[in-house]
Length: 335
Ligand code: AFP
Image (cartoon, rainbow, N blue to C red; front, side):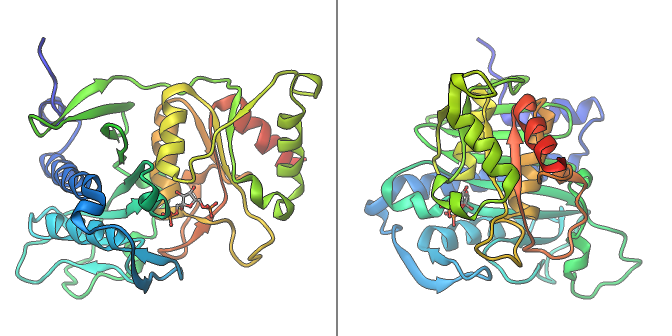
């Protein structure tokens, strides 16, 4: 059986002029870094990689050892190749500057190096989420790259993806032309195309939300979730099942595989923050993937990909997945 590896898929995309060679190289380097992260994650206690660093990131969250290791793997893999003008990550306060000794390229890479890392010590799936943007024209400015270069709406992403480190390691990728899923063949060390033309079913009977926050939600979400819980005898007329991994990669991966709706609404715990998830390196790449698979992604009021970011670590409410349900949630917000 002829197997299509990630490299072959990308080369064919370049050959038909869909993917520039430097973008192809960028994706290959990110995929290589994800293989290394997968290897580190799989060592667990044997590699001494579990537990906390005893430090906090810019969001005030405790950093796990693997958060820091994954961040370093991605930075080191991507800084020397000449395809990037800069990087930004959940784990760094400011934009990462490409060291002066290396050439700079046309793209920006934004990532959450290890999403769901609070699950890492209990051996549950975690992942790496990434987004690729073009670097705006700097008119010959060779100085440090500021945060403003990254502040582009999600519609400007030229590629997005995530790697999930679960029973299998998979890379899900969109170059703006559908979503492809590649499974890591550990013996060969290559990602192999196993899921072509992924589509999110339009309707679903499955939802994902952190129910423990219910008392803090706004009215439209209270209404929607109470209708889901009412099941067959309620206004939606069917029984729903709940699944919640608490790692966005794992919850989104399930939705890409069999449909569903994922919600992380804004709530009243920290009224100045519009939600928990981060726009640039969680919501935007996941929204591009979900839309490319035929699903919908909104913050309740507008399409996530249309939001103009105002800061690198900006938060946003997220409702994404099967079209029928996400449109219903948006309608409840409008009402
Ligand atoms: P961590 O990467 O810090 O574990 O956060 C994961 C996450 O951002 C997202 O993947 C989950 O959906 C969400 O947090 C779960 O957070 P709560 O447990 O606070 O609801």
